Image (cartoon, rainbow, N blue to C red):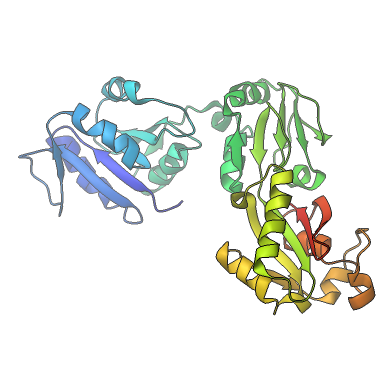
Amino acid sequence: MNRLKIAIVTINQPSLDSACLLSNYLNDFEVDIYGKKDLNHNLKTLLTYEKLDDILPTAWKTYDTIICILATGAVVRKIAPLLKDKATDPAILVLNLELNRVIPLLSGHLGGANELANFLSKKLPNCINFITTATDQTDTLAFEMLAKKNDWEIKNIKALANISNRLINKQIVKVATYKNIFDSLTQKNYLHWIALPNNEDKNQVVISPIAKTKSLHLRPKIYLGIGCNRGTNFESIQKAVKLFLTKYNLEFKDVKNIASFEAKKDEIGLLEFAKIYNFEIKFFDKKSINSLSNHFSPSASTIFFGLKGVAEPSAILISKYKELIIKKEVYFKSITIAGAI
């Protein structure tokens, strides 16, 4: 888990006592404890309040997680006006005074409530975790967790409920993606792979950084292979990459990393581009590039360096799933760019 920013909300002396004890198990996180004034505690800092309504709206925007040691019904009533959507709401957990029951009440998957509840149930003595998320209880693939784990962007999230319900009900869900990504999925029950491009279907999930769809859409990062002539300046490389990304409805934030042939590792323009956009560029040698069995687009590098290519093989070599999804394109007769996932 990341270093979460957590608020523990208490309402009386017993719940504050429990919060003080709970904080000992949360040393790996940034924790603030809220309580009523004039109560006893051993904390360096206690953030006091008069009414819950005075602190919850700000806490909602400030913390990754809010842990409430108070009645579940009271929590539900107090957070109801603050609810927006599962993509942005913080994780809400409720614990009892004995700290032996934990309920991940809200944002179980994307917000991380289920993950933190699992963590607490393992740390706290005799603690039982009351996870109510259906996909967890039925050991069903949760596409939002797949995206979160892999740092994929999620679009059209309102389509998620239908997809999850189909899997829970043991109905087929089509997955329009690249073969290597589909093969990497560890839970494939009731999933049916279809190749891209795809037709619109409410019962499908699309996994691609460049597809356009109204279906539930998971967008992996893309990796770029870049080749250039000797002495190509930063401005030309930057302009070429911008043109490439725009053509495929991508942005710089969608690029995970870049790569090239080792003969380019002293190219000032390419190195400047990597530095400015915070890419850790990787250079591959001739043996690595020529070891690939793929058939690549014709390349001048074959003549000059005896290579199968630069942009396309470099993109594959640096990528996670080793699959080329955009063949090389040439810009200004001096720069080649290809994309892989």
